[in-house]
Picture 1 (tube, rainbow, N blue to C red):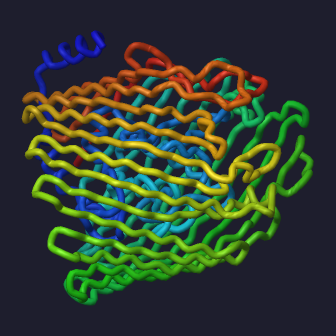
Picture 2 (cartoon, one colour; picture 1 turned 180 degrees about the horizontal axis):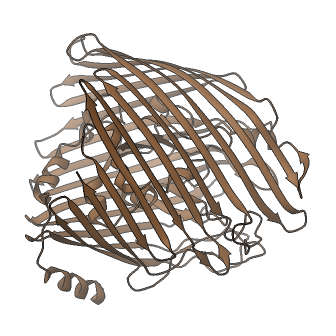
Picture 3 (cartoon, rainbow, N blue to C red; picture 1 turned 120 degrees about the vertical axis):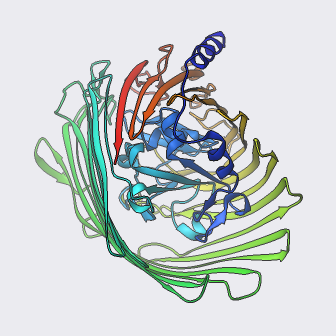
Length: 616
């Protein structure tokens, strides 16, 4: 702690300021509007779901560089990596693939193959306007996979901003990035393009962590008509290996993921607040991966899938005190290619060839103001799967404005996840995962300088799918209980402080602690803005120890405390910053299950990055 105090004292001696006002930014957050909870614009504290919104300006001030790092600024969310280096976000202790739904500008990017989203986590913060996150169930509006969380990334090219930006960065491990946002208007039509490229030469413990990542996005808007498209390509090394065989050969064993998606939407106004929106889109996902197996040698997989969808949303406000959303969606996914090779010879399909999945979804959500200070929200969704069973997902929420300063929220929600294709190929007898959640929350705005959000939850996840020799449902249910807190304060006009804290208690059906779940997650951040264009920040993160599996003889995973600091300078249209991660070189470790490696994933210690951006 003495180091934190010394660093805070030192940084306040620097004379500096930024173009934006911390006080203004904080006041805006008090009335933060989001559409993720109900698909209608609503103050997040009046939404029945528990929502967090992260803004670009604040994230950059804290030295956050990409989407993966940003999600650690959501209460109850932990970060981890698998042995192959794949990043995973853990919402409220639930770490299985496919439990979190990720959208980019409203388009779902989870694949049907595994439900994976990791290849978008390197998405740079410079391209992001804001990140909207539902903590907890969201299946009523977003269907399968929205069991523990929903993330929607709103890019700058899709927002109303018309600024052009060029940005570059460089740092430790020969890490280099560059990108741009370019937009223009042609009459009533806005055309925006964004792109970035990132590469690094990261090698640790003699294992290959090299990464190259490229994305190109297009957004066209003309009044109520919108078209967006994005391609994304990422290639990474296998680090400690998929099969616990270390990837010591740089550029040999790689994991390559290519994604393309597009969406067309048209909103037909039916009145001042009513509208009928039509959406249609297409997505394509391809993966090529190589890995060294301890006995079979080099294995290569090739996978390719496509998805079409059409959707209609009716937003209707004509009924007094009601905000009604009705939706209909049809989705068709298909396996185009799926092969497993050994030393260049085909040995089996990775998943069953020619698989198709048609999904018909009907959903509604109604927000009704029973009294002036009491809102009731009721939602229901029905999904019918061509290759699986149907599912119902209900939700019931209350928001009570007890006083001008205090809001009380309560939520009951059910959610589900259909097995992915790799899971069903491994075990065709799998059932869907389901969850039931109860939440109670409080929002207290003491004054214009202090905001406290607090919520408690209890979630029971049934028939959780886990991987042993095959995918199984040996755990009939698991319970996840916890409390989450967010406190934001501006004690000075030039100082904003944020304290995040969460406690998670995760138990299996035999009342054993679920492995690799840290019970306590906290972070404390401060941003100080001076008058000369300079600002400085500190971000202190603590993750408590976590237990191993019952059959794992190793000691518990130790706790970690990491301090980051950022120094930024803005002059006219130029913004620069120096970011130091893990100032005291403590090192970042993620727990891995017991295997032939018998060690955990080491992700490096102190790193330094220099960034510059030009707006014009």
